[in-house]
Length: 560
Ligand SMILES: [Zn+2]
Image 1 (cartoon, rainbow, N blue to C red):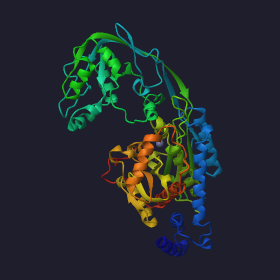
Image 2: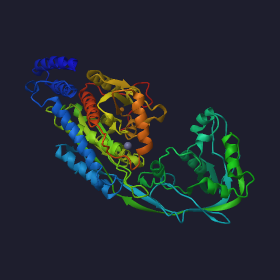
Image 3: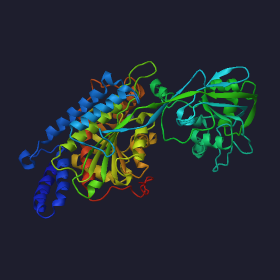
């Protein structure tokens, strides 16, 4: 804090000197001042001609709390995609952005960018696998049947089991070698985790997966594909599990509908299909899991039937802009994003309010926007605030935005995303996890702010869970935009915070228990938003464009 104070004095003097010489630099220096001010240094209001830091921080805290409370109110019913409540949340955010004096983005009149989506409803009574003897229940998912085109699918043929359907050039394992699947109804196991040895699982990881399997089987002329859901669930909490069965909304930009019906069945139904087979399903799966090639035709035939209806869904991203002050650099924008959608009601009608995930993220986004809008001297680059829809259903809003961006993607300097698991509310922030910080020069900007504020830079505590790959910003990163996602942790051992966070994931993530708790400490999200603000201003005022490091897998030519 003291350091910051001294540096500011120097900068102020410098700025006065330069004022007469290089007017163009002033915004950058003032921006730096503003950022530094937010770090907690107390400055004379006379010197800066504005409110002091504690006022700014109090405004942020108040804004974060109010936005989070509004979005989690009963009237918002969990902000489900395509629901009236989800659209009410969008309208609420649009009004808020308007009240802050922000501008609309090109192509949007009212801060809303319509995102065309489709809801696919499967007729569960008539999505079935028929055998000679009976009608067995199946389910279909929109991601595999795809697209809002023709709705129904029918196929008859002999049943054929191909294990995991692996074709792996590395290990040489090929479940489809010398096998004619044309006109067959192909059954594939999906229990990837049970694939014996670790090396094999790794080697096969690129060779399996529903999408790969699907196109492989279809290209070989199969009549239908049956995927057996024998993979263990990712989450033990039932609401999270519930999600995977309700992926019923799709973008209208998916490839043409497939000509081949695809359904999922339970292991129980699989056993019934293997009724007259010598192995039985369990036996065949066991052999496949040991790495044996178990491809063979079953003695039975079947008929696969898929019935669905497709209806348009109304949804919007909410976008606000603050034009940069530099006539050249303002062509480029720093994007701050967070998703406002939640999961709405669960199967029992219980509201999943999505407080930590991600009403709180939107609270921080809006507080940051308010702070930027209130700056006396605007940042040099443009600031764009993007509240996305449909993140929970496959980052649909973010995907639509990169295909229909508010400015060319090549002019997006950086993206900072808020999509947390609520660790911020544990208390005032002492440690920062910058997901993606090690991949681009954004890491340097973050490190500078951490140092200024005496914060500890914490490595990603999730490791293999790879949170960096699992939220909206990744959609921009894949188009070449340097990206950062921030997580704040309080004073005290990291292990303790992580323990608390993991307990929250188990109990509340994507579940009705994700509500604002009495124990929430709003100073934490205030601190994190303030750090993001300072980082954002630093990026927005820097002479150099942020860039991926050469070691980053995202280092590539930006596509417009
Ligand atoms: Zn989220």
